[in-house]
Length: 149
Image (cartoon, rainbow, N blue to C red; front, side, top):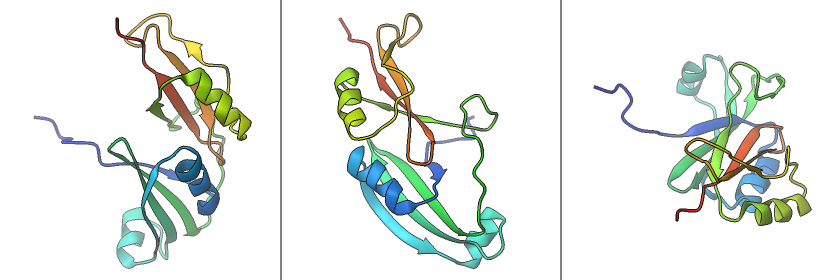
């Protein structure tokens, strides 16, 4: 029997919620479902930080929830966000016409780590992927699945 029964959400801590919403909602087209300030005893218990104050936004894309958190208290640190660092994570989004999308987003200031890369083997063989960063340097990935014959 599986312990996990489903996927609830992914979450990123961000430094500036307004800037992040411009990126995730306005640029990537996610739907904002909630944006609120939280400060309550249960939030401090959940996080393990006494006196926690935070702004939390919930965005939906393709049926999945992305939660963005901007801590007001306690102040956080900015770690090195390299994908090779243990504990670092990224999420990937399915897209159509990756080369065109990269051109459009590059023109709007998105920094890609490479041109779209064709996958030579495995379950995504014939598809394309590319890494890019959000305004805080968090790694995201676009995946264009292979054409089905």
